[in-house]
Structures are given as C-alpha cells and as structure tokens.
Image 1 (tube, rainbow, N blue to C red):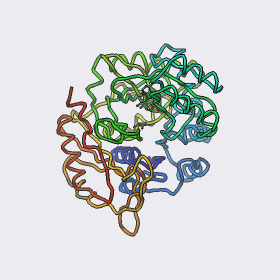
Image 2: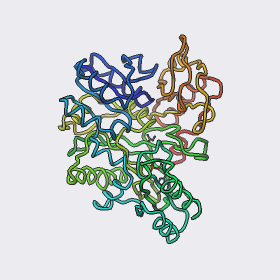
Image 3: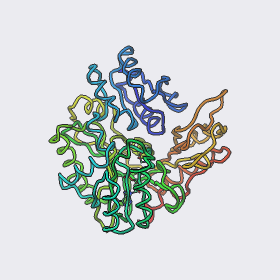
Image 4: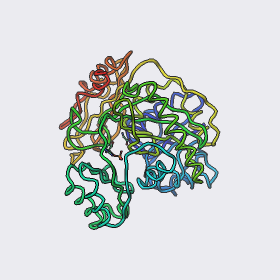
Length: 423
Ligand code: AMP
Ligand code: GLY
C-alpha cells in the first residue's frame, strides 16, 4: 500500500521510519518532509495546510492511507475533506480537533463528563476576567482559547501579570481571533506526563507511558518550548495511575465526544500533572506529541500501520500493542537562541557517525539540505534517540549520539530522563 505522512518535523520522521518497517507498505510520501524523511519516503513539496493540494495529490497517487502529523491541518478540516473524497485518513475531524483547537471546548467537555482538571472559568469580557483573577488570586494560569503555536499559556505569578496577559489577549488582540476568549485556571504543581491512546471513536488502545521536558534549560528552568526531550517508559505514571488515566480520562473523553456528536478518531494526547500519586488533566492535543513520538515509536514492537488504518476506517480491532522491553530516550538538539530568535543555515556535522552507534537513531526536525550539506532550518533541529535495557542505558546511548553531532550554536539539555532515575 501507499502511505502519505503530512508534516515535516521529528514526529513525522519517526512516523515515516516506523511505517517503513511495515511489510504492508510499498511506498511512503511525506509532505513536506525533511532530509531525514527522505531516507525512507519521497518528499512532496506541499505545505501542511495546503488541503486542496494534498487532497489532489492523494487522489492522483492513489494513496491508501494519509497520516496527519500536526494540529494545524486537523483544525482546518483536512480529515473531513479527505473523508468526503473517499480517502482513508488518520486523524480527528475538525469538530473533534477542537479538543486541542479550543481550550474552552476541552475544559467544558471535561467539566460535563467529570474528568478531573484544574478549576477554571472562560471569559471574552476583559472586566469579568479581571474580577475573576482578583477573586482567585495568584499564581494563576491564563490561556488563549485557540491555537497559539505554544505561546498561548501564561503562568502568572502575580495578579498583575495575569491581568496584563488578559489585556494582551482580549484587548490588544496579540493572538488575533485565537484570543477571542481566554480560559483562566488554577495553577497546578507536580510532575507532568504525556499519555496517548489510539482510538476509532469508540474503542481505545493506550500507548506506553512517556514524559516530555518542556523548558529550555536543565532542571526545568527557563521558558517553555515545544519539548526538549522525551522518554518512555515514564515511572511517574505508575501502574495504578496508568489504569486510572485510561478509565477516568481516555474512555470518558472518547465516549463524551461521541455523545456530543463529534466522535474522536486518531491519537488522543493527554497532558497530565501528577502529584502525590494523583493527577489532573492539563490539556488535550489532537495528535502525536513531538518529541514523545520518537521514543514511543522506537519502543513499539507492533506494526503501527494496521492500527492507523483501523482508526482511519473506524474499526479498531487490535486489543493491545506490543512493546520492546527496552527504554528509549530522545534528546532534542536545538538552534542557539531557541525558543526566541535563532539562526538558520548552520552546517551540521556528525549525523552519520551518531546513526552508526548501535541503538541510536537521529530523527530530523528543523533541517534542510543545501549544496549537499545538512543545515539547520528550524528551532528544534534534531531528535537524537537512544535505546537500552533501561532508562539509564538509553540516556547513555542518546548522549553518545549527541556527542558526535555539532554545529555552530547547538544547544541541548543534559538532564533528559533524569527524573526517571530519581524514582
Ligand atoms: P497547555 O498547552 O495547556 O499544555 O500548557 C502548556 C504548559 O503550560 C503545560 O505543559 C504546563 O507545563 C503548563 N501549564 C498549563 N496549564 C497549567 C496549570 N493549570 N498549572 C500549571 N502549569 C500549567
Ligand atoms: N511535546 C509536546 C507536544 O507535542 O505538544
């Protein structure tokens, strides 16, 4: 069969790498892809939000399955369009992708179906929002309702910071229409984990546990990023917590979405905050995590393609995924300056040397090929992924990989996975 993967980051390179291992697959395309995806797929120069172009491409090339990586095309309705054209596509509809596309929608769903989350209220009126902040006090969290490229969550330490955020969003419209309303919520403390489940809209198939590292610097310091490294399994998600998240979050969310008339198909990503062996939901995303996909897919023993196809067809038959016993750790190497302004076009050396290490795979994210060189082309540049018998040896492998790679200004955290060792 022929598969089209939509996206061009580390997540999509990992998807292409895993899909290429399936005996069911003859040909993979990736749009727009990156120099890493080009190893196993034919890259297609179409942007992720070019729904017309991608749909025409899929029809012309008789694509049997399209896998949508990032959130933007999902919230723009790519899946609805593909389905209307009779194409098999993995991902939620536009209505279901509101779970990520609107914080207000997801919080209201959680409230209605008794899914435990931070206390909150939604506002489109500035003065009412300010009054609520004054009532609740700080610290407090202000969230842009719509998609904001990871910049829409303000962890305000003071009431004034929260009020300034509300003014930015609702009055100055810094986030445009995405900021027509805000969610203001309780500030949670604890340790975050990322939880994923495949679903056809009715049945669920949970993945192994994982943990991301959101902040740019060691020790979870500095501003939030898209994710500076991830690993699996994550011992913070104990076996009882795992079972509770499935029973108390995943299943009621999928049942609730179906009851609301927008069944959710694809992969559901739940961000949870864990403290004292208890948890609350931070957020939903309508897609695979990046970089969580890299360690998860490199631990997955089951062929992922039948699962993706079943979800796309609305008939998930696999009852459990098989995993390799090994742990996997992905260290993100980023361009200097990221998550603020950063340079592009720096020549990267050592990727082949890192890939030559047994148990190391370098997934490309923000890279480009220029005159035969691989150069930096984004904030998060590479996801150097290592695996081993346990998290400690997987960490060693991943950092053996990063040591081989260099470019001008490269930065990465040196404590990825450390929280697992402390348990
Ligand atoms: P979100 O996009 O909602 O996941 O928020 C991005 C990040 O902000 C999360 O991964 C957390 O690190 C942090 N965050 C979000 N909501 C809260 C909250 N209620 N309390 C504390 N931190 C939060
Ligand atoms: N790594 C977190 C995310 O994909 O949003």
